[in-house]
Image (tube, rainbow, N blue to C red):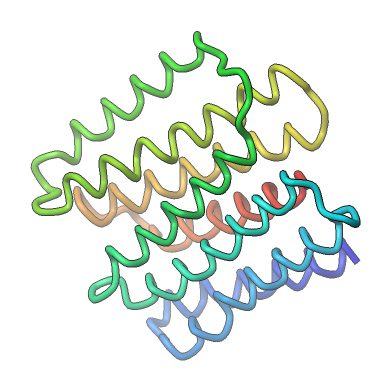
Length: 205
């Protein structure tokens, strides 16, 4: 079932990217949620019975991410709503990944966020505060995933960490493309790394 759902997610993700490149909102409204539904089902069916707290938190994060996906199809009107949905999703992931923080690695994440926000700062306009909050949330999410992997290294924690890194890459590309300057084939890279991130996080349950 994991392989089947992964193939469905891959095909649907490719069709989502195609729809985005063709600027077809109708196809995006079909295939973007469908990709996430396949990933959510993958996580759900691989969860234990009864589900652990970790599994419930990951599923909640995936669901809020899917809601954010739908908002961002019309990002010019609903960018803030999409950002807020993903913020809640990242909070769910932070709760799931939470462990004793690895302090040395915090330096890297703090430096990256400071560097990235410096690049975007004068282009953010009224969105400075929301973007700061979101950037901190995704940094903490990935930091906790790394800390959890360092503390207890196995394929579950490694999937979560690699997923968090793919998420940081995806959102960094999205932010740079939206606020700073166009990135060649931006939507291909943003969506590819985003769906990869969610798939890897789903595999961590």
